[in-house]
Image 1 (cartoon, rainbow, N blue to C red):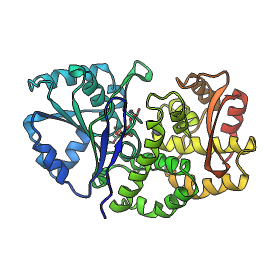
Image 2 (cartoon, rainbow, N blue to C red):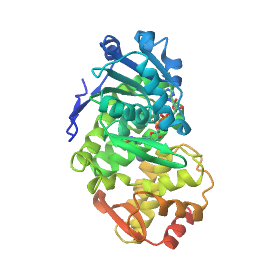
Image 3 (cartoon, helix red, strand yellow):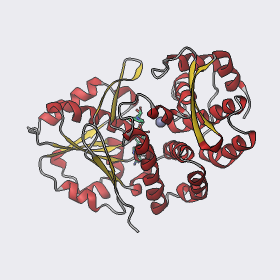
Image 4 (spheres, rainbow, N blue to C red):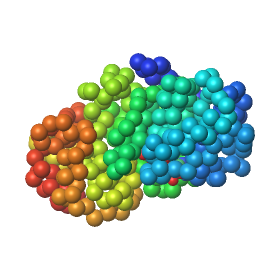
Length: 352
Ligand SMILES: NC(=O)c1ccc[n+]([C@@H]2O[C@H](COP(=O)([O-])OP(=O)(O)OC[C@H]3O[C@@H](n4cnc5c(N)ncnc54)[C@H](O)[C@@H]3O)[C@@H](O)[C@H]2O)c1
Ligand SMILES: [Zn+2]
């Protein structure tokens, strides 16, 4: 059965995510007028003789990506290359890649001619289940990650699980981490469905991935539609990210984002138990059945002092103490902004 598209309401413009069982949508995109394609170099090399074979090479920009290149210089490189195609404001910018490609091309789409039509094909599980909706574009500036950005959604997103088959296991499981988070946030029933689906997710079963991804986007949609500009409810999506972001940065990104988020959820749940809002048996259930099975990498050595310093520097941290989003009994989400540093250090140093 077909997985139905989802439309996200936005103050900027409504946009739709389509769930694709085959690559017909790419053939249609290849026929678009006034199109320029920007494709992650790795993705292009892996799929140029397969599903990306239909893309016209005369309208193609191959983009080398890395976190170091997610900056304004690469954006300028893209303006330059796009302008060589002598486009007008009716340009259709089609980008194909993961979150880095999304952030760079989303920023370009939002600023070129003050906004051009943008179509995004996410090629990592993380981008499919999470970053493709929400309308954020972010660039790094010097050592400040995601400091600069805009709110600008694509008009169309095409989710095609088949393209994920070339991802490394670590990159794939980065997306599984975010999938676990969203299912937990949506309650017991979704958590149980996720646990049951995990063996098929692990095998990259197309139907299971489409269904679970659609569910993730529905859940994220419910948070972002009510708070598009990230001032309140959307904060809860930061579950796992308070410790997670800090662990990524204190380990010099030795662990992928979504895998750090899994560790972050384990640690947040420990604090929730200490505060009496999560029963120990519920913490254990979630850790054993959801979080540990979603964690496939060896967690690097974590320097707790350095990590807590990074937590204090997080741009989302506006309160006196540290901010922490926690899961409580009944799969309720709770946010505190008064976590003492000493307590965060203790949590980081405990065994789990
Ligand atoms: N804008 C947002 O709302 C938002 C949200 C979350 C994360 N992000 C950003 O996303 C970035 C991380 O993105 P990501 O994890 O999706 O991946 P990525 O874009 O960093 O790509 C990860 C690696 O996988 C490769 N790759 C991509 N698709 C592939 C495929 N199908 N087969 C083989 N290799 C493939 C890439 O070339 C790269 O080497 C970070 O910069 C983060 O800040 C943005
Ligand atoms: Zn995340």
